[in-house]
Structure formats: structure tokens, C-alpha cells
Image (cartoon, rainbow, N blue to C red):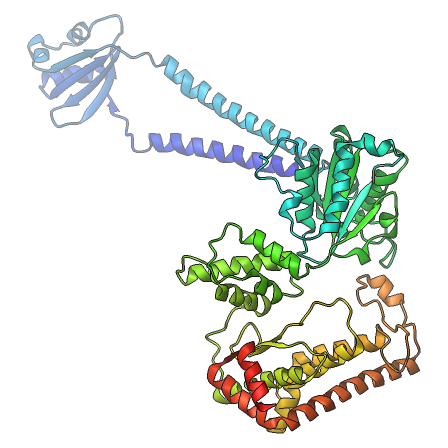
Length: 608
């Protein structure tokens, strides 16, 4: 309010200064004519010095023959000729002067308007502006505790624009679970007759881009009930109590519109574990979370209102939020398999002009581990690449190039390697490829390239023959050996290593650590030594200790080192025995810069 008052005072002062300047400039430069007596005028007339007299009421405006202007006054009751005659003006002298008689204008109304009405108008505008600002500030303070959730009503959007479950590829089991929720809201009697209660909440858990928010839009399109959607961050404010007030307002509004669905995206922004920091936990987030817990399953019953939320960080959520009665159903979403990836690509290419050679199955095969958002990006980048090359349709090569762009970044054509760097990069990538080709448990090589993309000077793409969710120890060891292929190839060829292998070593070390610490695949036995690396809370991290001794820690380090050393020895043996093949494929790669799977298989079979 103080800000509004200060602002308005400045406006008032500026307005008065502006008015003063306007009236001041209006009067500048207007010199008043010299005022003379009527007898002096009579004298000038007799001397034939006067050219013109303009009589406006009792005021006489005089101009002499030299152009000088004068003014005087006569008696209002007598005429001009009588007034001048009484001062001895000869009639012949007066007739030689140009005399104009004008009716005086009534300036009273105009003066009143200038003096009274214009300032009054300014004051009215000023006070209207003040009241408007004050009303806006009051309304803002009242609406500050209102929920920011947006309502998607039953008839708000056209059926063609609504997202339905049919528009979401894959996730069959997840859609069945959510369809049941929709059926419950549409036909509750069928479930009530069986003694079933409506679920209070559904929590969608999965990595980023897997389709959690898309499924929420599909629920809104299918449900046919009022749908309130918001984000967890909208409840987090600077002022204490605002978040809790917005939670209360959201649920009160939803109850009035019941049956209704409340969708809270990114629930971890407001639902994080309580008491996790140092020095107590009575902060704004905890108050907001407490209110959410009460609204979902407190003393009062929430009838016909279902809360659907999404998060990719279920590990940081408060346990009270995850218990049955609040979030009754925890639905996990995984990245799509090959069939689902193909279906997702069909949806995202439905309105795109595809060439006859497009094979979405091959694109799906080349994108293991891609989420739905990644696949949408691949389809879009393929269209952009085709348009950039002035093509009328999208070809298969555009999609394949877009996969590499999404994986590694755009080609860095301006990043030109020197001849030596190009040779080192080629040796490094062929080392990866040959190691993978000789190891039975490794994935087949799909492509080798020394064209820079992103931060990589070159890359080797390997794709599994079939998708797996379970990996054995031998497969982990084969992956470590393949990662060390570039490092070992440089060592064999040049007797030293370059910095290009740093990322490979980091990834190999991480896998070896997981093999020992998490999977129990070492001589230490089936014991987990992993620390909660996903813990994001400072207080817990400071107080949490390792669940093993320093002696065990030393053994863990030894086991990791043993795994890395054995993998290095195996890779060195493979590449040393096939040094000629390493040189042959390296020469081809330097010449062509890219080797696809078919050509690599031919070169490998010829030299193996």
C-alpha cells in the first residue's frame, strides 16, 4: 500500500508541474500593449498619427501609422465619437481613421471552465486512479491465498482436441489402472454395490519424459468430470501459510465441483520428507505438506475427489504421503520396449509426409532406452532435417541422423581435427568396436564414426540383439571391457594414452563399483555395500554412516580394481592378437569417417 501511495504522490506532483508549465509557456512572449490616456489618444488623432482603432466594449485597441500598438479605455455609457469629441477631436480627423466596432465576447464561462472544471477533471481522474489501484491491491491480497489450479471443465474443449487413452501408445497396464479410476467416477454405483471405496490418490512414478503428464491429460479427456491441474511449485511461496491456504482452497473448490480430479504435477516440490534438515523443520513446505495430508485423508471425508500426482523422485517423498488412504495406488511407468517405441513413433509421425523407404521398426530398434519424449524429439528432428535439405518428404536417413543428434548432439562441422588427432580418434573408436565384436556377451556394433558430435570427437554405437531388463555378471564385465577398448587400442598403437578415454574410464569404474557394492557379484559375497547416493538432504547425509567397516571398504576398493584390471588384460589380449585388423579398419575409418554395421561385419569377417 505504501508503494501505491508513494507512486500516486509522484503522479500528483508531476501533474501540477505539467499544468504550471503549460500555462507558463502559453503566456511567455505575449507583450502587453502600452496603455495611454484618452486625452493622449485625442492628441494623437488630431496630429494624424493614428491608423486604426478597434473598439471592443469599453476597451480601445489602437495602432498608429508606425505600427505601434496602444490600449485605452472609454466610458462604457457613451459612444466612441462622443467620448473623443469631448476631448476635442475634430470630426474630419476621426473620419480619416479606420474604426472597427466589435461586440465583446462573454469570457465568463470559458474562464470558469479553465479555472474550475479542468482542475476538477484532473482531480477526479487522479482519485479514480487511486481507488482503482487500492482496489487492485486489496483484490491481490485476497487472491494471494487462492489456488492457482486451472479448471478443465466437462465441455471446455472440443472432443477432437482432447487427449484420450488411445492417443497414448504403450503403457497398457497403466492405462487399465487409470481407466478403472475413470469408470469409478463415471459409474460409482457399480463399485459401491460391491463394497468398494473410491481410491483417494494415484501416484504416477517414472523417469522424465516417460509420459506421466500425457497420461494425466488423457485422464482429463476420458473422465468427463471437472479436472483441476496444477504444479507442486505453485504452493511454495515466501509468506508462511500461503501454501497451506492454497491447498485448502483447491480442495474446497474441488469438493464443490465433485466428482472431480485434482492433478498435481511434480509432487516432490511440495511433498518432500519432513524433518530432513538441520535445526528443525517448521518451515513453509512442511506446513503445506501437512495440509495436503489432512485434505487427502484427515478427519473429514473427501467424497468423489481423486488426487492424481506425478513425480520422478519418489525416494524423497514423505512416507505419510505414500501410505494407503492417501495415495492408494503407486503406478510405475517404464521406458517403452521396441513394440511400444514403434507405436509411439507412429503417433508422432501421423501428420508428417513420410517417404516410401521409412521403416519405423528400424528406428525403434536403434532407440533402446529412449523415452516417449525422446522419440517425439527424434520424429521432430527428422522433419527439421528434411526441411533443411528442401525435401518434400521425410526419408529414413533423416530419422537415423536425428537419432544420433538426440543421443550425442549436432555435428560439429567447424571442429576440424588435425591429421594426428583424427588418427588417434579412429584408433580409439575401432578399439571399442573390435572389443565388442570379439566378446560374446557384448552388444553388436551398429556404427563407428569420427565425425565430431557434441563434446565427442568420435563415437561407436552398439545396440543389443534383444532388450533386457536383467544383466548377468559376464555381461557387465563385457561392457567394461568394451569401454576400455579405446584406452587399450591407444596404448597398443602409440605406447601412451590420450585424454579422450576419460569418459570411458569413468563409466567403466561406475559399473565396476555397482557390481561390487550393489549387485553382490564379487568375492565379498551377496552383501550390499551401497550408500544412498540419491539422498538429497544435508541433515541425513551428515548423520548417515557407512554400513561397513574401514577394512571392508579397503576390500571393496580391491575388488573394483581387480575387475578393472582383468577387463583391461582381456581387452589388451584381444587387440594385441588382432593388431593387423585394428590397423585395417582404422585406415578405412580415416578414409570414410563413418562405417556402418554391414561394412564393419565384412571387414571383421575378412580379418578375423
